[in-house]
Image 1 (cartoon, one colour):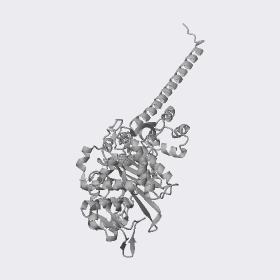
Image 2 (tube, rainbow, N blue to C red):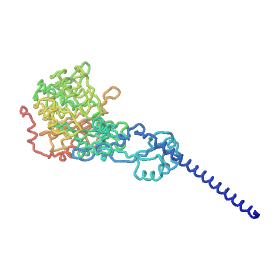
Image 3 (cartoon, one colour):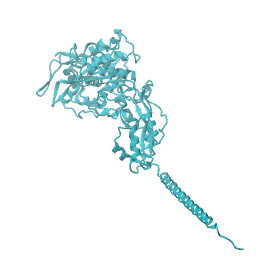
Image 4 (cartoon, rainbow, N blue to C red):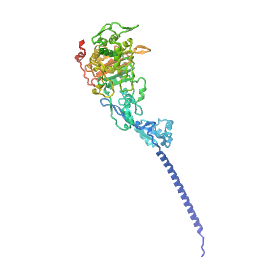
Length: 569
């Protein structure tokens, strides 16, 4: 039987075409699968590579725990917040995780246009683990940056220090740097103790630390700040400062030094003349040092409260003569020497004591060493190790040596609290805690004499302007007008004025030093000596703060009569 092949040709050709198309499709699928595998392989490899990157536990060399660590709030003695932490977002980058640097630069500058393009590009390039881009941003900026979706860009929440009182307690508190570490003031002192330890252990991160309670009363601090600001303006002074101390505990109730700075902007502390004049300024104290001479001489027994001294003529040393400013030039009793601020009489008192005994008393009162105190901004006093006859004479009325106002207020506290030296502190301290720290420097009888002299000067001497402003509060004190050294010589036109005081002297509680630097004559005032500026400012201050401190005015004359020693009645 014959088989015909007619018509099979087209069929075979069709089958061949189908097979060719099938083979081509399969080849395309294989190539597509291979391409997908290669693509997934590359992506997977990159992910593995990124996953194998060791996490850097530091940001530009700074431990993350330290950067995110909190600081304890600082409170005044009544619980008012003086310094607190606020949480702020800070932008950082991980350059080794950034895929497209140019894209990251372009996108970031749409939100942060102030960033320099070249700087940012350099910042985001390389294989560093962490670099800062911009710190302490707002939550709104954080939200905008996160919406950009840039790989390798993220935020860390930091603690930033905030001081609600702004400048008012700047020299007490100090400030912190951008890493929230204390760089001055009590903030730096805290970092030398428990706070730094907690941060090192990582226990300060995200935890609420116990508040630090200071001795400062922000009500009094506010008034002192206002009065010192007013003094600078009223007397056109280049500086003003003041400090108040609890005489029984050594607690600093208030401390102000102007010019000052804003602790919320630490760079303002670098401006010239913003140093703390109370602790790191040393000055010739002038006549407020006469109280030291009187206390030392009376306590030594070399002089008595009713002794008299020849102040008729100046005291000669070679070709130089030391005389009195508006001197009486007559025989003066010891109280008269004090209330008339006689240089001649004060020299005679010191000479009765003896220059070596006088120098030893200065050491007993701590005038030749740094005051033990928490603030790091301190200076050593300048007191000669040995005093010549003329050196002892000038030192007796506050010239030829330089000490800080903190030295002086600490000494005055001891003079009126019964004779116990107590180192000052910025932390709360009870009387029970303070008493074991007392160092006896005067006998109680001498302390009573000094209180009498200080009150007498307020009633009848150079402190009368102060007394007018603080009637009823039984304030007593001593003025001091120290001429500055200009071109190697004392200048009568450039002076630093002080008023050292305590109140209420019938039952003393507080000692205070007020300083006005280079005051000018106030219109209507009688002069530029300390009684007219530092003294008057003291009176205004006491009149405002005494009621806050629970001290009521009392105009009874019997309180002043009770201060007079029996031998003088």
